[in-house]
Length: 123
Image 1 (cartoon, helix red, strand yellow):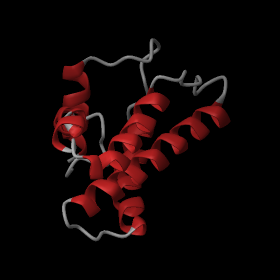
Image 2 (image 1 turned 90 degrees about the vertical axis):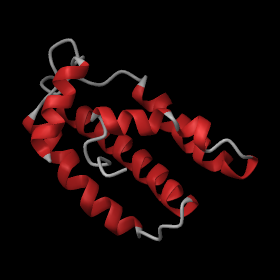
Image 3 (image 1 turned 180 degrees about the vertical axis):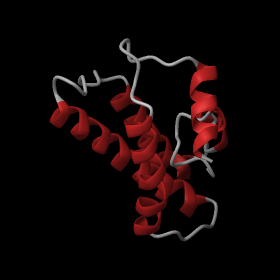
Image 4 (image 1 turned 90 degrees about the horizontal axis):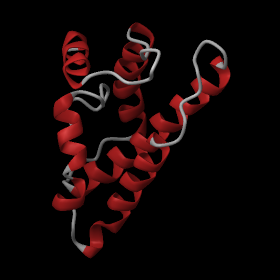
């Protein structure tokens, strides 16, 4: 998850989309549940940053918190002992930079190629 801070990077999305397959044991259920919470939140309406900046920030903060919870579980499952603080610090830098540098398009959708190019610029 080297792209955990730029979670819309194509490699990050591929890794995240493999969670249900890679972590399929009964003991991995907390990981799948955490991933389901991320997906559920991603499908909620993202408030408009211009008309509802506080709600927009709150939505993004909730997504960030859900992702940190997921990354903590993923790391522990594969033997990493990163603290939540480490995840918060390293992920927030890229997450904040990506969201403020590249706000969503008016439709809220960015093409896969556009996301990949933008996230590569952040590396």
